[in-house]
Amino acid sequence: MFLLPSRDIEQKVFTYRGKMFEFKLYITKDPPEGNTNYLGRVDSIIISEKNTHKYFQTIICNENSYDCVPTDSPIFYHEDMNFDGYEDFRIVESMPAGPNVPYLYWLYNPDSRGFE
Image 1 (tube, rainbow, N blue to C red):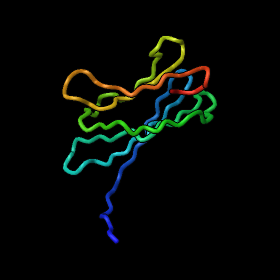
Image 2: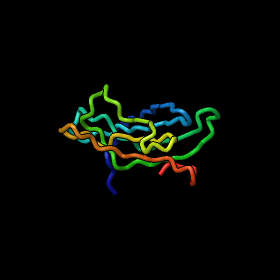
Image 3: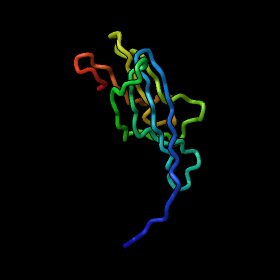
Image 4: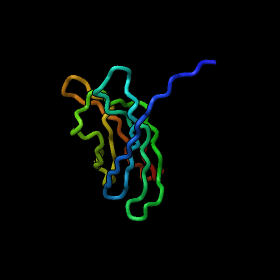
């Protein structure tokens, strides 16, 4: 049996309020060995209705990492991205060296009443 040394893993919660929804981003900071600039990754996004605070949906994120994002750079945006009148959202997928930043995004689908 092998025991791994324990490490402190820091988790933070950031809340963003949009027009219809409240988004809670659960960000884990578990830096790769030797990387002091690592800001973390979004593990999940818990969405609730803004006015009632009623649970709406959970999004599990496993494809993002912020190892070089300046601390004053936003990583979350909520806006109507497909111009259908509904609030959508996106998060920064990673921070490349160049100016083109990739995003993971979710669009609200009124038929299924959820983000896809």
